[in-house]
Length: 101
Image (tube, rainbow, N blue to C red; front, side, top):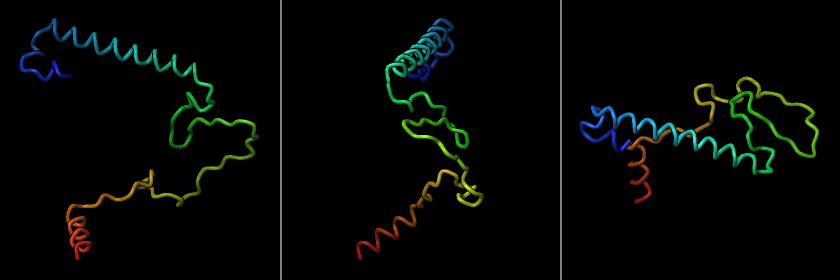
């Protein structure tokens, strides 16, 4: 990324090919290392598939009796992650003034 930010570097085809080769080889090596590390872990949660509604599950020494989705209306459809609302700079200035008082 640093090399591509330099002026004129994208016009050099040899440098551009080199950068792309290094990037793809590093990404492949990182994937291989992640797979190797995943095989070393004894944690059953390792390698579970991420998802919002159908995430992977792991259970140990228990029997899964039932798994029910959240009922409708249990979460805000506009904010399914339940993140707190962003505070505008005007609101934070008002809060600072009230704390000082």
